[in-house]
Amino acid sequence: MISYDGTIDVALINMPFASFRQPSFALGLLKSSIKDKFKVKVFDFNVYFAEKIGADLYDRIATWHIVDLLGDRLFAQTLYGDQIPPFEEYVDKVLNGNLKEHEAPYDKKLVDYAFYNELLEVQKMTDQFLEECSRIIAKANPKIVAFTSMFHQQTSSLALAKRLKKVLPHVLVTFGGANCKGPMGMELMTHHTFIDCVCLGEGDSSFKKLVCACTDDQTIDVLSNIPGMIFRKDLKSDDVNPFALCSKTLEMDLNLVPTPDYDDFAQLYAERKFMHKEKPRVFFEMSRGCYWGQKKRCIFCGQSSETLIFRKKNRERIVTELRKIVNEYPAFALSASDESVDEGALEALIEALSTLQRKPEIVYLQVRPDINVKMLKKLAVCGLKRLEVGIESLSSKVLSIIGKGVNGLQNITFLKNCREAGIEPIWNFLWGFPKEPESSYKNMANLIPLLTHLHPPNYAGPFRLDRFSPCFENPYEHGIREIKPYPSYRFVYPFNEEVVDNFASFFTFKFQSPQNVKDYTRQLQENIFFWKEIYPKSALYYSQDLVIDKRSGIDEWHIRLDPLTMAVCKASSKPVTMQEIPQRLKEMEIVKSEEEIRQSIGYLIKYGILLKEKEMYLSLVTEERGDAMTCDD
Image (tube, rainbow, N blue to C red):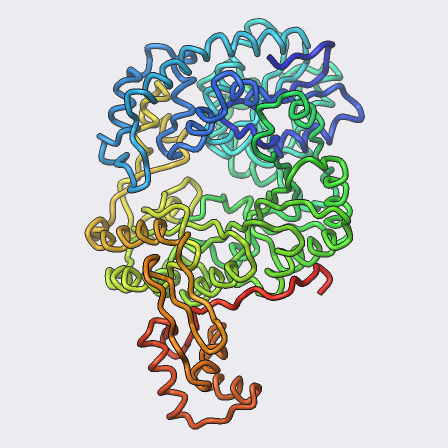
Protein backbone atom coordinates (compact mmCIF):
# COMPACT_ATOMS: atom_id res chain seq x y z
CA MET A 1 0.00 0.00 0.00
CA ILE A 2 1.08 3.61 -0.49
CA SER A 3 2.39 4.70 2.90
CA TYR A 4 3.32 7.97 4.51
CA ASP A 5 4.85 8.73 7.88
CA GLY A 6 4.29 12.04 9.62
CA THR A 7 1.56 14.64 9.76
CA ILE A 8 0.65 17.14 7.06
CA ASP A 9 -1.49 20.21 6.59
CA VAL A 10 -3.04 19.28 3.27
CA ALA A 11 -3.75 15.94 1.58
CA LEU A 12 -4.37 16.05 -2.17
CA ILE A 13 -6.06 12.89 -3.39
CA ASN A 14 -6.19 11.24 -6.81
CA MET A 15 -8.59 8.28 -6.91
CA PRO A 16 -9.43 5.50 -9.39
CA PHE A 17 -10.02 5.38 -12.27
CA ALA A 18 -7.63 8.14 -13.27
CA SER A 19 -4.75 6.79 -15.37
CA PHE A 20 -1.93 5.41 -13.25
CA ARG A 21 0.56 6.32 -15.97
CA GLN A 22 0.44 10.02 -15.26
CA PRO A 23 0.10 12.27 -12.21
CA SER A 24 -2.82 14.62 -11.76
CA PHE A 25 -1.98 17.91 -13.44
CA ALA A 26 -4.46 19.78 -11.22
CA LEU A 27 -3.03 18.38 -7.98
CA GLY A 28 0.51 19.07 -9.19
CA LEU A 29 -0.44 22.72 -9.62
CA LEU A 30 -2.17 22.92 -6.24
CA LYS A 31 0.76 21.35 -4.43
CA SER A 32 3.19 23.73 -6.09
CA SER A 33 1.09 26.75 -5.08
CA ILE A 34 1.19 25.99 -1.34
CA LYS A 35 4.25 23.81 -0.68
CA ASP A 36 6.45 26.73 0.41
CA LYS A 37 4.22 27.50 3.40
CA PHE A 38 2.48 24.20 4.20
CA LYS A 39 3.15 20.49 4.51
CA VAL A 40 1.36 18.97 1.55
CA LYS A 41 1.36 15.58 -0.16
CA VAL A 42 -0.35 14.09 -3.19
CA PHE A 43 -1.77 10.63 -2.55
CA ASP A 44 -2.08 8.78 -5.87
CA PHE A 45 -4.39 6.05 -4.62
CA ASN A 46 -5.25 5.25 -8.24
CA VAL A 47 -1.73 3.83 -8.62
CA TYR A 48 -2.24 1.52 -5.64
CA PHE A 49 -5.58 0.29 -6.95
CA ALA A 50 -4.06 -0.44 -10.37
CA GLU A 51 -1.37 -2.48 -8.64
CA LYS A 52 -3.99 -4.22 -6.51
CA ILE A 53 -6.29 -5.37 -9.33
CA GLY A 54 -3.68 -5.60 -12.10
CA ALA A 55 -2.62 -3.00 -14.65
CA ASP A 56 -4.37 -4.62 -17.63
CA LEU A 57 -7.72 -4.93 -15.87
CA TYR A 58 -7.41 -1.39 -14.51
CA ASP A 59 -6.73 -0.06 -18.02
CA ARG A 60 -9.70 -1.92 -19.46
CA ILE A 61 -12.00 -0.35 -16.87
CA ALA A 62 -10.46 3.14 -17.12
CA THR A 63 -10.76 3.22 -20.92
CA TRP A 64 -14.23 1.68 -21.18
CA HIS A 65 -16.85 3.61 -23.16
CA ILE A 66 -17.10 6.76 -21.03
CA VAL A 67 -20.90 7.22 -21.05
CA ASP A 68 -21.33 3.78 -19.43
CA LEU A 69 -19.72 5.12 -16.19
CA LEU A 70 -18.09 1.75 -15.44
CA GLY A 71 -15.43 3.10 -13.09
CA ASP A 72 -18.03 5.05 -11.11
CA ARG A 73 -20.41 2.08 -10.91
CA LEU A 74 -17.76 -0.16 -9.33
CA PHE A 75 -17.44 2.21 -6.35
CA ALA A 76 -21.11 3.23 -6.22
CA GLN A 77 -22.07 0.01 -4.41
CA THR A 78 -19.90 0.74 -1.38
CA LEU A 79 -21.09 4.36 -1.36
CA TYR A 80 -24.86 3.92 -1.83
CA GLY A 81 -25.45 0.22 -1.13
CA ASP A 82 -28.84 -1.18 -2.14
CA GLN A 83 -30.15 2.26 -3.11
CA ILE A 84 -28.95 1.61 -6.65
CA PRO A 85 -30.02 -1.21 -9.03
CA PRO A 86 -28.14 -4.56 -8.92
CA PHE A 87 -24.81 -4.84 -10.71
CA GLU A 88 -26.07 -7.70 -12.89
CA GLU A 89 -28.83 -5.46 -14.26
CA TYR A 90 -26.31 -2.68 -14.90
CA VAL A 91 -24.05 -5.02 -16.88
CA ASP A 92 -26.95 -6.32 -18.96
CA LYS A 93 -28.59 -3.00 -19.76
CA VAL A 94 -25.63 -0.64 -19.88
CA LEU A 95 -22.36 -2.45 -20.54
CA ASN A 96 -23.90 -4.97 -22.93
CA GLY A 97 -26.11 -2.35 -24.53
CA ASN A 98 -29.58 -3.81 -23.98
CA LEU A 99 -30.80 -0.29 -23.36
CA LYS A 100 -31.10 1.49 -26.69
CA GLU A 101 -29.12 4.49 -25.46
CA HIS A 102 -26.18 2.22 -24.59
CA GLU A 103 -26.13 0.13 -27.74
CA ALA A 104 -22.55 -0.79 -28.47
CA PRO A 105 -20.65 1.10 -31.16
CA TYR A 106 -19.05 -1.23 -33.67
CA ASP A 107 -15.69 -1.27 -31.86
CA LYS A 108 -17.02 -1.80 -28.32
CA LYS A 109 -16.45 -5.24 -26.82
CA LEU A 110 -19.19 -6.75 -24.68
CA VAL A 111 -18.83 -8.19 -21.19
CA ASP A 112 -18.22 -11.93 -21.33
CA TYR A 113 -18.41 -14.33 -18.39
CA ALA A 114 -14.72 -13.96 -17.47
CA PHE A 115 -14.77 -10.16 -17.51
CA TYR A 116 -18.03 -10.09 -15.55
CA ASN A 117 -16.44 -12.11 -12.75
CA GLU A 118 -13.39 -9.87 -12.77
CA LEU A 119 -15.64 -6.84 -12.34
CA LEU A 120 -17.43 -8.50 -9.42
CA GLU A 121 -14.08 -9.14 -7.75
CA VAL A 122 -13.02 -5.52 -8.26
CA GLN A 123 -16.29 -4.33 -6.72
CA LYS A 124 -15.70 -6.57 -3.67
CA MET A 125 -12.20 -5.14 -3.23
CA THR A 126 -13.33 -1.51 -3.07
CA ASP A 127 -14.35 -1.68 0.60
CA GLN A 128 -10.99 -2.87 1.87
CA PHE A 129 -9.18 -0.49 -0.45
CA LEU A 130 -11.12 2.50 0.88
CA GLU A 131 -10.49 1.39 4.46
CA GLU A 132 -6.75 1.29 3.84
CA CYS A 133 -6.78 4.70 2.14
CA SER A 134 -8.74 6.12 5.06
CA ARG A 135 -6.26 4.73 7.56
CA ILE A 136 -3.31 6.32 5.75
CA ILE A 137 -4.93 9.76 5.59
CA ALA A 138 -6.08 9.54 9.21
CA LYS A 139 -2.53 8.82 10.29
CA ALA A 140 -1.30 11.92 8.44
CA ASN A 141 -4.05 13.93 10.20
CA PRO A 142 -4.39 16.80 7.70
CA LYS A 143 -6.54 19.87 8.24
CA ILE A 144 -7.69 19.84 4.61
CA VAL A 145 -8.38 16.95 2.23
CA ALA A 146 -8.86 17.95 -1.41
CA PHE A 147 -10.15 15.61 -4.13
CA THR A 148 -9.80 16.10 -7.84
CA SER A 149 -12.87 14.61 -9.50
CA MET A 150 -12.82 13.85 -13.20
CA PHE A 151 -15.39 11.85 -15.12
CA HIS A 152 -14.56 8.32 -13.96
CA GLN A 153 -13.44 8.96 -10.36
CA GLN A 154 -16.47 10.61 -8.81
CA THR A 155 -17.88 7.81 -6.64
CA SER A 156 -14.48 6.54 -5.49
CA SER A 157 -13.67 10.08 -4.30
CA LEU A 158 -17.05 10.45 -2.59
CA ALA A 159 -16.75 7.06 -0.91
CA LEU A 160 -13.35 7.91 0.58
CA ALA A 161 -14.45 11.42 1.58
CA LYS A 162 -17.40 9.95 3.49
CA ARG A 163 -15.13 7.61 5.45
CA LEU A 164 -12.61 10.34 6.18
CA LYS A 165 -15.26 12.62 7.63
CA LYS A 166 -16.17 9.90 10.12
CA VAL A 167 -12.62 9.28 11.32
CA LEU A 168 -11.50 12.92 11.02
CA PRO A 169 -14.62 15.01 11.76
CA HIS A 170 -12.52 18.18 12.02
CA VAL A 171 -11.04 17.86 8.52
CA LEU A 172 -12.24 20.19 5.76
CA VAL A 173 -13.25 18.13 2.72
CA THR A 174 -13.17 19.95 -0.59
CA PHE A 175 -13.80 18.87 -4.18
CA GLY A 176 -12.78 20.31 -7.53
CA GLY A 177 -12.38 19.23 -11.14
CA ALA A 178 -14.50 18.59 -14.22
CA ASN A 179 -17.29 16.94 -12.19
CA CYS A 180 -17.68 20.08 -10.09
CA LYS A 181 -18.23 22.77 -12.71
CA GLY A 182 -21.19 25.08 -12.15
CA PRO A 183 -24.45 23.39 -11.07
CA MET A 184 -22.79 19.96 -10.88
CA GLY A 185 -20.67 21.14 -7.97
CA MET A 186 -23.62 22.62 -6.11
CA GLU A 187 -25.67 19.44 -6.51
CA LEU A 188 -22.69 17.37 -5.44
CA MET A 189 -22.42 19.17 -2.12
CA THR A 190 -26.18 19.38 -1.54
CA HIS A 191 -26.54 15.60 -1.51
CA HIS A 192 -23.29 14.65 0.22
CA THR A 193 -23.18 16.31 3.63
CA PHE A 194 -19.60 15.20 4.29
CA ILE A 195 -18.35 17.71 1.67
CA ASP A 196 -17.60 21.13 3.15
CA CYS A 197 -16.83 23.14 0.03
CA VAL A 198 -16.49 22.82 -3.72
CA CYS A 199 -14.50 24.79 -6.29
CA LEU A 200 -16.80 25.38 -9.25
CA GLY A 201 -14.11 26.31 -11.79
CA GLU A 202 -10.34 26.75 -12.00
CA GLY A 203 -8.90 26.47 -8.51
CA ASP A 204 -5.29 27.67 -8.67
CA SER A 205 -5.59 30.88 -6.61
CA SER A 206 -8.83 29.98 -4.82
CA PHE A 207 -7.41 26.84 -3.25
CA LYS A 208 -4.36 28.68 -1.92
CA LYS A 209 -6.63 31.25 -0.27
CA LEU A 210 -8.73 28.46 1.24
CA VAL A 211 -5.68 26.73 2.71
CA CYS A 212 -4.35 29.97 4.19
CA ALA A 213 -7.72 30.74 5.79
CA CYS A 214 -8.23 27.25 7.23
CA THR A 215 -4.74 26.84 8.62
CA ASP A 216 -5.29 30.10 10.49
CA ASP A 217 -8.05 28.16 12.29
CA GLN A 218 -10.89 30.12 10.77
CA THR A 219 -14.10 28.12 10.70
CA ILE A 220 -16.21 27.30 7.68
CA ASP A 221 -18.88 29.71 8.88
CA VAL A 222 -16.61 32.73 8.61
CA LEU A 223 -14.89 31.85 5.35
CA SER A 224 -16.05 34.15 2.58
CA ASN A 225 -14.99 36.03 -0.54
CA ILE A 226 -12.87 33.18 -1.90
CA PRO A 227 -13.45 33.35 -5.67
CA GLY A 228 -15.21 30.36 -7.17
CA MET A 229 -15.61 28.48 -3.87
CA ILE A 230 -19.01 27.52 -2.50
CA PHE A 231 -19.38 26.47 1.14
CA ARG A 232 -22.13 24.49 2.82
CA LYS A 233 -23.59 27.59 4.37
CA ASP A 234 -23.99 29.08 0.86
CA LEU A 235 -26.43 26.35 -0.17
CA LYS A 236 -29.14 28.04 1.89
CA SER A 237 -28.89 31.20 -0.19
CA ASP A 238 -30.99 31.73 -3.31
CA ASP A 239 -28.50 34.32 -4.54
CA VAL A 240 -25.70 31.88 -5.38
CA ASN A 241 -25.00 31.78 -9.13
CA PRO A 242 -22.72 28.82 -9.91
CA PHE A 243 -21.84 30.15 -13.36
CA ALA A 244 -20.80 33.53 -11.97
CA LEU A 245 -18.69 31.78 -9.32
CA CYS A 246 -17.11 29.63 -12.00
CA SER A 247 -16.05 32.65 -14.06
CA LYS A 248 -14.45 34.31 -11.01
CA THR A 249 -11.84 31.53 -10.78
CA LEU A 250 -10.25 32.16 -14.16
CA GLU A 251 -6.50 32.72 -14.05
CA MET A 252 -6.10 35.51 -16.57
CA ASP A 253 -2.30 35.74 -16.28
CA LEU A 254 -0.96 32.21 -16.65
CA ASN A 255 2.58 33.45 -16.09
CA LEU A 256 1.67 33.71 -12.39
CA VAL A 257 0.61 30.05 -12.18
CA PRO A 258 3.41 27.90 -10.71
CA THR A 259 5.11 24.98 -12.43
CA PRO A 260 3.41 21.76 -11.27
CA ASP A 261 5.12 19.56 -8.68
CA TYR A 262 5.08 15.84 -9.55
CA ASP A 263 7.60 14.64 -6.96
CA ASP A 264 5.16 12.35 -5.13
CA PHE A 265 4.25 10.56 -8.35
CA ALA A 266 7.91 10.32 -9.39
CA GLN A 267 8.68 8.62 -6.09
CA LEU A 268 5.90 6.09 -6.67
CA TYR A 269 7.24 5.38 -10.12
CA ALA A 270 10.71 4.72 -8.73
CA GLU A 271 9.31 2.30 -6.14
CA ARG A 272 6.73 0.36 -8.19
CA LYS A 273 8.09 -1.82 -10.95
CA PHE A 274 4.69 -2.61 -12.44
CA MET A 275 4.53 1.00 -13.67
CA HIS A 276 7.65 0.53 -15.80
CA LYS A 277 6.05 -1.52 -18.60
CA GLU A 278 5.09 1.68 -20.38
CA LYS A 279 6.77 5.05 -20.15
CA PRO A 280 4.79 7.35 -17.84
CA ARG A 281 4.10 10.97 -18.74
CA VAL A 282 3.83 14.32 -16.99
CA PHE A 283 1.83 17.33 -18.07
CA PHE A 284 3.05 20.75 -19.11
CA GLU A 285 0.86 23.74 -19.90
CA MET A 286 1.23 26.55 -22.41
CA SER A 287 -2.34 27.87 -22.61
CA ARG A 288 -5.93 27.46 -21.42
CA GLY A 289 -9.17 27.88 -23.28
CA CYS A 290 -9.54 27.66 -27.06
CA TYR A 291 -8.41 30.38 -29.46
CA TRP A 292 -10.72 29.07 -32.19
CA GLY A 293 -13.66 28.66 -29.82
CA GLN A 294 -13.52 32.36 -29.00
CA LYS A 295 -14.33 33.06 -32.65
CA LYS A 296 -16.84 30.29 -33.23
CA ARG A 297 -17.63 27.38 -30.92
CA CYS A 298 -17.96 23.86 -32.27
CA ILE A 299 -21.57 22.91 -31.58
CA PHE A 300 -20.61 19.80 -29.58
CA CYS A 301 -17.77 21.35 -27.54
CA GLY A 302 -18.30 20.56 -23.84
CA GLN A 303 -16.00 23.27 -22.54
CA SER A 304 -18.09 25.87 -20.72
CA SER A 305 -18.20 29.36 -22.19
CA GLU A 306 -16.75 30.71 -18.92
CA THR A 307 -13.52 28.71 -19.35
CA LEU A 308 -13.32 29.00 -23.14
CA ILE A 309 -11.45 32.32 -22.92
CA PHE A 310 -8.02 31.79 -24.47
CA ARG A 311 -5.08 32.64 -22.21
CA LYS A 312 -1.45 31.89 -22.95
CA LYS A 313 1.89 31.99 -21.15
CA ASN A 314 4.53 34.18 -22.74
CA ARG A 315 7.30 32.68 -24.83
CA GLU A 316 9.98 32.98 -22.15
CA ARG A 317 7.80 31.28 -19.53
CA ILE A 318 6.92 28.37 -21.85
CA VAL A 319 10.60 27.80 -22.66
CA THR A 320 11.87 27.97 -19.06
CA GLU A 321 9.03 25.86 -17.66
CA LEU A 322 9.42 23.11 -20.23
CA ARG A 323 13.16 22.92 -19.62
CA LYS A 324 12.55 22.70 -15.88
CA ILE A 325 10.04 19.85 -16.19
CA VAL A 326 12.32 17.91 -18.55
CA ASN A 327 15.28 18.30 -16.18
CA GLU A 328 13.32 17.41 -13.03
CA TYR A 329 11.54 14.38 -14.50
CA PRO A 330 13.96 12.85 -17.01
CA ALA A 331 12.34 9.40 -16.93
CA PHE A 332 8.99 10.70 -18.13
CA ALA A 333 7.49 11.59 -21.48
CA LEU A 334 5.63 14.88 -21.89
CA SER A 335 1.93 15.52 -22.43
CA ALA A 336 0.47 18.97 -23.12
CA SER A 337 -2.62 19.87 -21.12
CA ASP A 338 -3.70 22.54 -23.64
CA GLU A 339 -7.12 22.33 -25.26
CA SER A 340 -5.84 23.95 -28.46
CA VAL A 341 -2.30 25.18 -29.09
CA ASP A 342 -1.83 28.27 -31.25
CA GLU A 343 1.12 28.99 -33.53
CA GLY A 344 2.94 31.21 -31.04
CA ALA A 345 2.92 28.53 -28.35
CA LEU A 346 4.13 25.92 -30.84
CA GLU A 347 7.04 28.17 -31.82
CA ALA A 348 7.97 28.54 -28.14
CA LEU A 349 7.73 24.77 -27.69
CA ILE A 350 10.06 24.17 -30.63
CA GLU A 351 12.51 26.75 -29.24
CA ALA A 352 12.54 25.01 -25.87
CA LEU A 353 13.05 21.57 -27.38
CA SER A 354 15.78 22.74 -29.77
CA THR A 355 18.08 23.70 -26.86
CA LEU A 356 17.76 20.41 -25.01
CA GLN A 357 20.52 17.86 -25.46
CA ARG A 358 18.15 15.05 -24.49
CA LYS A 359 14.99 15.36 -26.53
CA PRO A 360 11.99 14.26 -24.45
CA GLU A 361 9.28 12.16 -26.00
CA ILE A 362 6.06 14.17 -26.43
CA VAL A 363 3.15 11.75 -26.43
CA TYR A 364 0.26 14.17 -26.52
CA LEU A 365 -0.34 17.59 -28.04
CA GLN A 366 -3.67 18.92 -29.28
CA VAL A 367 -3.74 21.11 -32.40
CA ARG A 368 -6.07 22.20 -35.19
CA PRO A 369 -5.76 20.42 -38.56
CA ASP A 370 -4.72 23.64 -40.33
CA ILE A 371 -1.34 23.59 -38.57
CA ASN A 372 1.59 24.65 -40.78
CA VAL A 373 3.24 21.55 -42.31
CA LYS A 374 6.78 22.84 -41.73
CA MET A 375 6.00 23.34 -38.04
CA LEU A 376 4.55 19.83 -37.93
CA LYS A 377 7.79 18.35 -39.26
CA LYS A 378 9.88 20.41 -36.84
CA LEU A 379 7.85 19.04 -33.95
CA ALA A 380 8.40 15.52 -35.21
CA VAL A 381 12.19 15.80 -35.17
CA CYS A 382 12.01 17.46 -31.74
CA GLY A 383 10.42 14.35 -30.21
CA LEU A 384 6.72 14.58 -31.02
CA LYS A 385 5.20 11.12 -31.53
CA ARG A 386 1.49 11.81 -31.69
CA LEU A 387 -1.00 14.63 -32.03
CA GLU A 388 -4.63 14.85 -31.03
CA VAL A 389 -6.58 16.80 -33.61
CA GLY A 390 -10.21 17.80 -33.97
CA ILE A 391 -11.00 16.37 -37.40
CA GLU A 392 -14.48 14.88 -36.71
CA SER A 393 -15.49 14.66 -40.39
CA LEU A 394 -14.13 14.59 -43.93
CA SER A 395 -17.14 16.40 -45.39
CA SER A 396 -16.90 20.16 -45.84
CA LYS A 397 -20.69 20.45 -45.54
CA VAL A 398 -20.75 18.64 -42.20
CA LEU A 399 -17.71 20.55 -40.95
CA SER A 400 -19.48 23.82 -41.74
CA ILE A 401 -22.59 22.74 -39.82
CA ILE A 402 -20.61 21.89 -36.68
CA GLY A 403 -18.45 25.03 -36.79
CA LYS A 404 -14.98 23.53 -37.26
CA GLY A 405 -13.61 26.33 -39.45
CA VAL A 406 -11.81 23.93 -41.81
CA ASN A 407 -12.87 21.93 -44.88
CA GLY A 408 -12.56 18.27 -45.82
CA LEU A 409 -9.44 18.68 -47.96
CA GLN A 410 -7.64 20.45 -45.11
CA ASN A 411 -8.40 17.53 -42.80
CA ILE A 412 -7.13 15.01 -45.35
CA THR A 413 -4.03 17.14 -45.93
CA PHE A 414 -3.31 17.04 -42.20
CA LEU A 415 -3.49 13.22 -42.17
CA LYS A 416 -1.18 13.11 -45.16
CA ASN A 417 1.30 15.51 -43.54
CA CYS A 418 1.33 13.39 -40.38
CA ARG A 419 2.23 10.29 -42.38
CA GLU A 420 5.10 12.13 -44.04
CA ALA A 421 6.32 13.53 -40.71
CA GLY A 422 6.09 10.17 -38.92
CA ILE A 423 3.50 11.43 -36.42
CA GLU A 424 0.49 9.43 -35.26
CA PRO A 425 -2.69 11.55 -35.42
CA ILE A 426 -5.31 10.75 -32.79
CA TRP A 427 -8.72 11.73 -34.12
CA ASN A 428 -12.42 10.93 -34.02
CA PHE A 429 -14.90 10.43 -36.86
CA LEU A 430 -18.26 11.72 -35.62
CA TRP A 431 -21.73 11.71 -37.12
CA GLY A 432 -25.36 12.12 -36.12
CA PHE A 433 -25.25 15.91 -36.00
CA PRO A 434 -28.59 17.71 -36.33
CA LYS A 435 -29.43 18.85 -39.88
CA GLU A 436 -26.52 17.01 -41.49
CA PRO A 437 -27.05 15.99 -45.17
CA GLU A 438 -27.35 12.23 -45.80
CA SER A 439 -25.56 12.59 -49.15
CA SER A 440 -22.35 13.61 -47.35
CA TYR A 441 -22.12 10.16 -45.76
CA LYS A 442 -22.48 8.33 -49.07
CA ASN A 443 -19.71 10.53 -50.47
CA MET A 444 -17.43 9.88 -47.48
CA ALA A 445 -18.07 6.12 -47.66
CA ASN A 446 -16.90 6.20 -51.30
CA LEU A 447 -13.89 8.31 -50.34
CA ILE A 448 -12.46 6.06 -47.63
CA PRO A 449 -10.96 3.33 -49.90
CA LEU A 450 -8.75 6.07 -51.35
CA LEU A 451 -7.46 7.04 -47.89
CA THR A 452 -6.45 3.72 -46.33
CA HIS A 453 -2.75 4.70 -46.38
CA LEU A 454 -3.55 7.58 -43.99
CA HIS A 455 -4.11 7.03 -40.28
CA PRO A 456 -7.69 5.91 -39.53
CA PRO A 457 -9.83 7.38 -36.74
CA ASN A 458 -9.36 6.06 -33.21
CA TYR A 459 -13.08 6.34 -32.52
CA ALA A 460 -15.95 6.45 -34.97
CA GLY A 461 -19.55 6.89 -33.92
CA PRO A 462 -22.31 9.34 -33.01
CA PHE A 463 -21.27 12.61 -31.45
CA ARG A 464 -21.78 12.88 -27.70
CA LEU A 465 -23.99 15.56 -26.22
CA ASP A 466 -22.02 17.13 -23.37
CA ARG A 467 -23.07 19.59 -20.71
CA PHE A 468 -22.09 23.19 -21.54
CA SER A 469 -21.96 22.55 -25.29
CA PRO A 470 -23.91 24.89 -27.61
CA CYS A 471 -26.20 21.95 -28.52
CA PHE A 472 -26.95 21.43 -24.82
CA GLU A 473 -27.39 25.08 -23.94
CA ASN A 474 -29.46 25.99 -27.05
CA PRO A 475 -31.08 22.73 -28.15
CA TYR A 476 -33.93 24.25 -30.18
CA GLU A 477 -31.55 26.38 -32.21
CA HIS A 478 -29.50 23.30 -33.06
CA GLY A 479 -32.40 21.01 -33.94
CA ILE A 480 -32.56 18.71 -30.92
CA ARG A 481 -35.07 18.01 -28.15
CA GLU A 482 -35.84 15.76 -25.15
CA ILE A 483 -32.39 15.97 -23.57
CA LYS A 484 -31.88 13.42 -20.79
CA PRO A 485 -28.87 12.01 -18.90
CA TYR A 486 -27.64 8.64 -20.13
CA PRO A 487 -29.50 5.81 -18.30
CA SER A 488 -26.16 4.73 -16.78
CA TYR A 489 -26.49 7.59 -14.27
CA ARG A 490 -29.55 5.87 -12.73
CA PHE A 491 -27.34 2.84 -12.01
CA VAL A 492 -24.79 5.00 -10.18
CA TYR A 493 -26.71 7.72 -8.29
CA PRO A 494 -29.80 7.02 -6.12
CA PHE A 495 -31.42 10.43 -6.57
CA ASN A 496 -34.50 11.75 -8.31
CA GLU A 497 -34.56 12.72 -11.97
CA GLU A 498 -33.91 16.42 -11.42
CA VAL A 499 -30.88 15.79 -9.20
CA VAL A 500 -29.39 13.22 -11.58
CA ASP A 501 -29.90 15.68 -14.41
CA ASN A 502 -27.72 18.19 -12.54
CA PHE A 503 -25.10 15.52 -11.80
CA ALA A 504 -24.72 14.40 -15.39
CA SER A 505 -22.05 15.37 -17.90
CA PHE A 506 -23.33 13.28 -20.83
CA PHE A 507 -26.81 13.26 -22.34
CA THR A 508 -29.06 11.56 -24.88
CA PHE A 509 -31.44 13.48 -27.14
CA LYS A 510 -33.85 13.26 -30.05
CA PHE A 511 -33.83 15.17 -33.32
CA GLN A 512 -36.53 17.76 -33.97
CA SER A 513 -36.78 16.44 -37.53
CA PRO A 514 -36.33 12.66 -38.06
CA GLN A 515 -32.83 11.49 -39.04
CA ASN A 516 -32.22 7.81 -39.71
CA VAL A 517 -28.56 8.01 -38.76
CA LYS A 518 -28.02 4.26 -38.52
CA ASP A 519 -29.11 3.68 -42.10
CA TYR A 520 -27.25 6.47 -43.83
CA THR A 521 -23.99 5.84 -41.95
CA ARG A 522 -23.99 2.02 -42.25
CA GLN A 523 -21.74 1.86 -45.33
CA LEU A 524 -19.44 4.48 -43.83
CA GLN A 525 -19.07 2.44 -40.65
CA GLU A 526 -18.24 -0.71 -42.62
CA ASN A 527 -15.64 1.15 -44.66
CA ILE A 528 -14.05 2.64 -41.54
CA PHE A 529 -13.75 -0.85 -40.09
CA PHE A 530 -12.03 -1.91 -43.34
CA TRP A 531 -9.78 1.15 -43.09
CA LYS A 532 -8.64 0.18 -39.59
CA GLU A 533 -7.92 -3.37 -40.71
CA ILE A 534 -6.03 -2.47 -43.87
CA TYR A 535 -4.04 0.57 -42.70
CA PRO A 536 -0.92 -1.29 -41.41
CA LYS A 537 -0.39 -2.76 -44.92
CA SER A 538 -1.52 0.24 -46.97
CA ALA A 539 0.67 2.76 -48.78
CA LEU A 540 0.62 5.25 -51.66
CA TYR A 541 3.96 6.83 -52.51
CA TYR A 542 6.29 8.03 -55.26
CA SER A 543 9.11 5.89 -56.63
CA GLN A 544 10.94 7.71 -59.45
CA ASP A 545 8.41 7.97 -62.31
CA LEU A 546 5.99 5.57 -60.63
CA VAL A 547 3.28 5.82 -58.03
CA ILE A 548 3.18 2.67 -55.88
CA ASP A 549 -0.39 1.95 -54.80
CA LYS A 550 -0.89 -0.57 -51.97
CA ARG A 551 -4.17 0.85 -50.69
CA SER A 552 -6.04 -2.43 -51.10
CA GLY A 553 -3.73 -4.07 -48.58
CA ILE A 554 -3.48 -7.06 -50.91
CA ASP A 555 -2.29 -6.05 -54.37
CA GLU A 556 0.49 -3.66 -55.31
CA TRP A 557 -0.09 -1.45 -58.34
CA HIS A 558 2.69 0.36 -60.20
CA ILE A 559 1.21 3.39 -61.95
CA ARG A 560 3.60 4.94 -64.46
CA LEU A 561 3.06 8.68 -64.94
CA ASP A 562 4.34 10.78 -67.82
CA PRO A 563 6.47 13.78 -66.77
CA LEU A 564 3.60 16.29 -66.94
CA THR A 565 1.17 14.14 -64.97
CA MET A 566 3.82 13.42 -62.34
CA ALA A 567 4.50 17.17 -62.09
CA VAL A 568 0.79 17.98 -61.75
CA CYS A 569 0.51 15.36 -59.02
CA LYS A 570 3.41 16.87 -57.08
CA ALA A 571 2.15 20.42 -57.66
CA SER A 572 -1.04 19.37 -55.84
CA SER A 573 0.72 18.12 -52.71
CA LYS A 574 -1.44 20.57 -50.76
CA PRO A 575 -4.87 21.93 -51.77
CA VAL A 576 -4.55 24.11 -54.88
CA THR A 577 -6.87 25.68 -57.43
CA MET A 578 -6.70 25.09 -61.16
CA GLN A 579 -5.26 28.59 -61.52
CA GLU A 580 -2.40 27.82 -59.08
CA ILE A 581 -1.22 24.62 -60.79
CA PRO A 582 0.37 26.31 -63.86
CA GLN A 583 2.34 28.63 -61.57
CA ARG A 584 3.68 25.65 -59.60
CA LEU A 585 4.56 23.88 -62.83
CA LYS A 586 6.39 27.00 -64.00
CA GLU A 587 8.51 26.82 -60.81
CA MET A 588 9.47 23.30 -62.01
CA GLU A 589 10.32 24.81 -65.42
CA ILE A 590 7.30 23.16 -67.05
CA VAL A 591 4.99 25.19 -69.27
CA LYS A 592 1.90 23.45 -70.65
CA SER A 593 -1.52 24.46 -71.89
CA GLU A 594 -4.58 24.34 -69.65
CA GLU A 595 -6.03 21.54 -71.79
CA GLU A 596 -2.94 19.36 -71.28
CA ILE A 597 -3.02 20.03 -67.54
CA ARG A 598 -6.70 19.12 -67.34
CA GLN A 599 -6.01 15.85 -69.15
CA SER A 600 -3.41 14.97 -66.54
CA ILE A 601 -5.81 15.92 -63.75
CA GLY A 602 -8.49 13.66 -65.24
CA TYR A 603 -6.04 10.76 -65.37
CA LEU A 604 -5.03 11.24 -61.72
CA ILE A 605 -8.65 11.46 -60.59
CA LYS A 606 -9.48 8.28 -62.55
CA TYR A 607 -6.88 6.32 -60.58
CA GLY A 608 -7.93 7.79 -57.22
CA ILE A 609 -4.64 9.62 -56.84
CA LEU A 610 -6.07 13.13 -56.91
CA LEU A 611 -9.12 14.49 -55.06
CA LYS A 612 -11.29 17.32 -56.34
CA GLU A 613 -13.60 19.40 -54.16
CA LYS A 614 -15.28 22.31 -55.91
CA GLU A 615 -12.33 24.11 -57.50
CA MET A 616 -9.66 22.64 -55.20
CA TYR A 617 -7.35 19.69 -55.94
CA LEU A 618 -5.25 17.55 -53.58
CA SER A 619 -2.82 14.74 -54.38
CA LEU A 620 -3.06 11.78 -51.98
CA VAL A 621 0.44 10.48 -52.76
CA THR A 622 2.92 10.81 -49.91
CA GLU A 623 6.53 11.83 -50.31
CA GLU A 624 9.22 9.44 -49.14
CA ARG A 625 10.82 10.83 -46.02
CA GLY A 626 14.20 12.34 -46.79
CA ASP A 627 17.07 13.52 -44.60
CA ALA A 628 15.96 14.47 -41.12
CA MET A 629 15.68 18.15 -40.45
CA THR A 630 16.49 19.65 -37.05
CA CYS A 631 14.41 21.67 -34.61
CA ASP A 632 16.32 24.77 -35.68
CA ASP A 633 15.56 24.38 -39.41
